[in-house]
Image 1 (tube, rainbow, N blue to C red):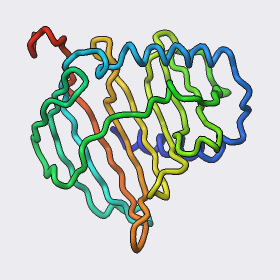
Image 2: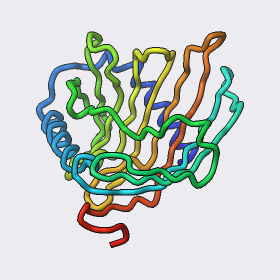
Image 3: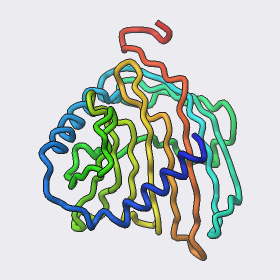
Length: 226
């Protein structure tokens, strides 16, 4: 997870959060076609609803950020996770102090099942990756907004950049995901969370970065390694 990727992610989400309200909200049948297929693909490629077992290694770094942007403190933890039939089976801590971290959360909201206005980017050249802006009516409040990037042919997601305009307890909150396909199933391989909590005396800023590696998948009727 390079500094450049994190920087571009933050810039993209910040710009989207400011300008989404001004975009044309007329439905685009072409974008709706891709959106509907992405929704179907999200069900088919979801490992937690498929009955498979899988494991992976996750390294998480948490950085406390001062109001002027300086990094005040960094903690990290490396853990091995094993899931089966949609549930967490076991966790093994390899390195770091797990007590300094909340439970790992790699989940992303069901954006493809939600109601959004869709818009394409003017510089779309028709390549394999299709980026779409997503935003909702203000009446829907807490629904995240931002950008989704899908495969134009297979419809699975490449990335999500989400801004939460009204998250309780936060002055600012964003989550971004990059995905990888393993044995036909989609897994997040990088997750960035940036937040500013409304503290008692002053806002508390942080960055939470998780990288996922060594993803292994097998069916419930097979043993690990087969």
